[in-house]
Image 1 (cartoon, helix red, strand yellow):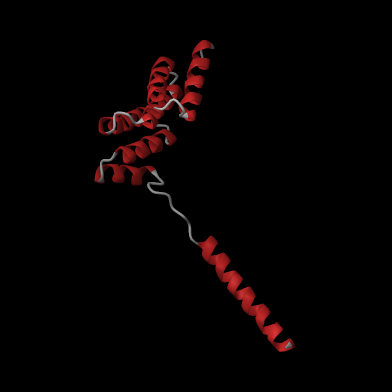
Image 2 (image 1 turned 60 degrees about the horizontal axis):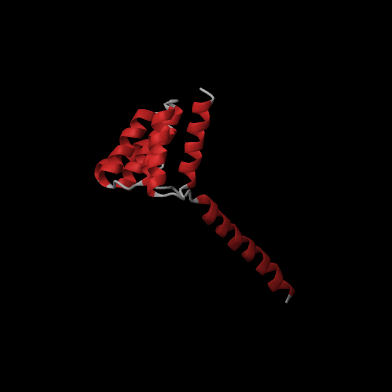
Length: 133
């Protein structure tokens, strides 16, 4: 009985180590995790979701005009895409073009009045415009 206990512990440690390595060793990649992948995906399969993702990647890269262009492409394919209007608002806000940002977020909220991120971005634009920042 004592010998089995000594054999069981190393086997359990080995199994638990394999589980940890397997769980931690694989990097979960999100679709279009970077800008180049997003560009390829949008050109390969022109969907509103791919263009929205491309818009986000351009935004993250600080390429706000391209962010707006990609979101507008998404809107050509899906005119009621509130998140695309939100991305446009965010990009205009980053460029301190408050009126255009406000307009884009208002459009997003007409489509989806509960879209909290659009509410937040609208508040950002309105507040910044009032304080002339």
